[in-house]
Length: 87
Image 1 (cartoon, rainbow, N blue to C red):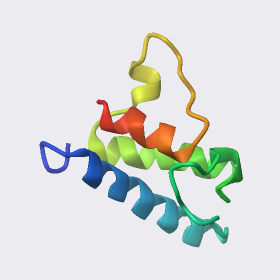
Image 2 (image 1 turned 30 degrees about the vertical axis):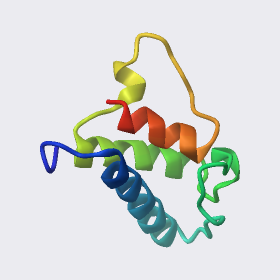
Image 3 (image 1 turned 180 degrees about the horizontal axis):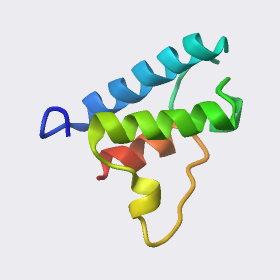
Image 4 (image 1 turned 90 degrees about the vertical axis):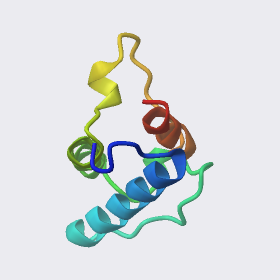
C-alpha cells in the first residue's frame, strides 16, 4: 500500500483522482461524481473501469474483487468506494 495505511477519505480521493485521469486519457466525459452515481452511468466504459481496478490495485495494493470469496459487484460509486475502504 502506498502510504501503508489509507483511511476511507484517502481511498475515496484516490478513486476519484484515478477516474478523472482515466477519463482524460480515454477522451471520456465523467458524470458529476457522487456516491449515488450508478457506475454504469459514470462515463467510463467497461474497459475504463477495468483500468481503474488495475490502477487501484497498483496504488492501494488490493484488488477486492479477486480477493473476495463471495463475489459482490458494486452498483454505485459509493458502493465501489466502500469495497475499497473496507479492505
